[in-house]
Image 1 (cartoon, rainbow, N blue to C red):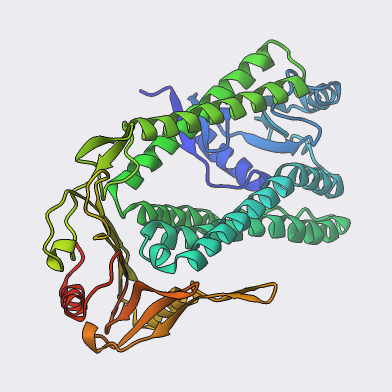
Image 2 (tube, one colour):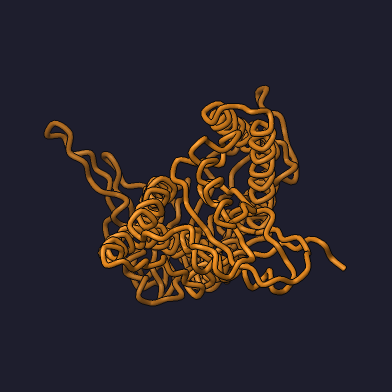
Length: 462
């Protein structure tokens, strides 16, 4: 028979009535609370008893305190005189129990009870949640910048698409916590003046709904490739290890009697140091090849050029130089393809290996397949808008697309890039649901353009 049970908590830290009811139910079933933390509460088996519990708040207490303060001890002594026995101290919470049915309640005046809870909420909730909200807003702003810079790459990434609603959800959760804090305090203070204690009500459906939706968006965000799942596992293991080691250090320093500020500083420094080491380890693993940076393209060989070691790729390409020109050369062919439910996007390039006499016959192009028609014009216009003339001191630096005849491409629309004082062999070509931006490193003939158009129009991205 088990003597210890760990139970997941799904009630608010600031809801004493719900906590008391839960502890009384557990005691009636033969379990006494022994340890509490943010996720799990630990119970020890005992004889089933009908007990009353009281949860009180001491705003000046901290989980980093080596021992309770004199004021805490005085309060505990007064409670003991009324038959209340201390069973647990946890951060700013003190939990008492009694087997006396007629024991005088510990908190009899709702006004200081409300103010104590509110002071604890301000110390623990406001800064943490507001700081979290600011970080989420910053992350979403950076994502918006990525969307503006390269919308096709952004919209074809499941990670980007589903991390956006995840960020919104976490932001709303942080703001909701702050709103609950102020709203509850305003209502509870008015009720307390009338002699009524208004508790902070736990919302189990909100908590579980938040957890389930967050988990869903997180799974969808990393579902694009197994590599992202591998990275997620690495980060979760690292964060779990940091949390466990920091808790160990905090507990050890409390036992040694270290002052609160010393314990807080040492724990914070350990977290920062371990985070730095963990991030450096993940980066080193990625650069060393133990944790691959990508799944779409891996080198098949290397060669030496002028003292430099260069990678060689041999990925399949929809369109190759050999499809257009009869040449005999050594190439590196590289491809990167990603897909979401909105967009399928591929980047391709074919480069000559350095050191050959042949020059100029190279290709690079991007293919965007638009699955949601409403995004077509947005993606097309974003590619056009990436090239805009700039004026500096009355001098116009030319950089823009101009429309050309789409017939050779067999396309609906086509543009050619004008840059500086010339016209480049870079084209933007649009079919019904496909947009291609292609750069020739030579001047293609009409026949070569027709061949390229036929291949690019009909090929399916892997």
